Every structure is written in structure tokens, then in C-alpha cells.
Amino acid sequence: MDSNNYLKDISEIKNMMNKSSRFLSISGLSGILAGIYALIGAYLGYRIIYANNIITIDGYRTLILTENRIIQIFIIAFSVVALAMMTGIVLSYSKAKTQNESLWDSTSKRLLINFAIPLVTGGLFILILMDKGVYAFVAPLTMIFYGLALINASKYTLGYVRSLGITMLIVGLISTYFLGYGLFFWALGFGVCHIIYGTIMHFKYDRVNK
Image (cartoon, rainbow, N blue to C red; front, top):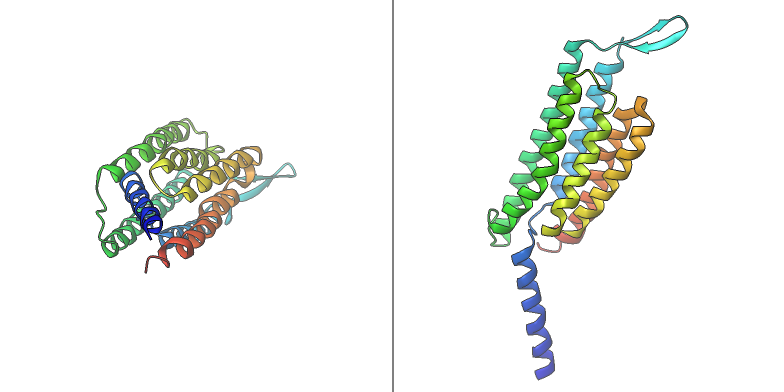
């Protein structure tokens, strides 16, 4: 009995330390929904980019993008990110409330800071490239910097976040080699990968805690 109680106490202490150093209220369902938003955004982006935009010049098919269409794509991308963030906050708040935990504490602050540094840096870099008229690397770089942000923040949350970050890095790097297919890789990374990892996290963590 003493041995069992001792092991139980150690387990409880370990869980308390883990909760104090890691943000565990991330909702897997928010990852699934973020992936769905990304796939919808990719579909809308595809319609804007490729619908009546391909012309033939001297026997070569050329893609023509106007400034207005680029703005539309930017609005879609911003809307997808904003919707995914709002969904993540709402579902994480609901999960934290269910577990009687605080959504905003020192751990979540460290998580946000470490996530924001690579993401904001990448966002500014991408905006500079767009201002210079360099659009080919926009899709790959969004995945690469997002992957770096996830990896940088993963030490303050679930381990699957790091795995998702590494996956996003790989997809982003492959996308730099196939520049003409950036939108499809973007759908794969932000859409399919989010849904896969979100589903794993949902069944492993969300349902267990109910």
C-alpha cells in the first residue's frame, strides 16, 4: 500500500509540474476546423488565380495575375488565419474552463511569445517580397515560418505541435522546388496536415478529458 501511494503521489506531482510548464488546453477540434478553413480558402484562391487567367503566348501557357486578384487572395488568406485563430481561442477557452484551468497565464504567455516571434518575422519578410513583386515564394514561406513558429512554441504545449511544425517545414521546403504548385502544397500543409494532426489530438486528448 505504501509503495502504491508513493507511486501515486509521484504521478500527481509529475502531472502538476507538467500542467504548470505546458499549455494543455489546445483543442484538437480547432486544428480540424482550421484545416477545413484552409481547404475552403485554397479552393477560393484557385478559382481566383486560375479562372480565365491563363493565356497562351507564342505557344506557352502563361498565368496573368492582376493587382485586384492579388488583393482578393490576400483577403482570403487573412480571413482564413483570423477565423482559425478565433476558433482556436474559443475552443481552447471552452476546454480550459471544462478543466478548471486558466487560459491566460504565464505559460500561455510564453507560448504566444515564442509562437509570434518567427511568425511575425516571416510575415514581415513575406510582405516585403510581395512589395517587390516576388510572389512565387509566398506560399512556401508561409508554411516554413509557420512550421518554425510551431516548433519554437512546442516546448510549452503538446508534443504533437512540434511534429506538425516539422511536417509543415518539410512540405514548405518541398514546395520551394515546385513553385508553380504553391497553392496545392499550401492546401496540403495548412489543410490536410492540420486536419490529420487535429484529429489525432482530438481523440487522444479532448475526448479523454470529457
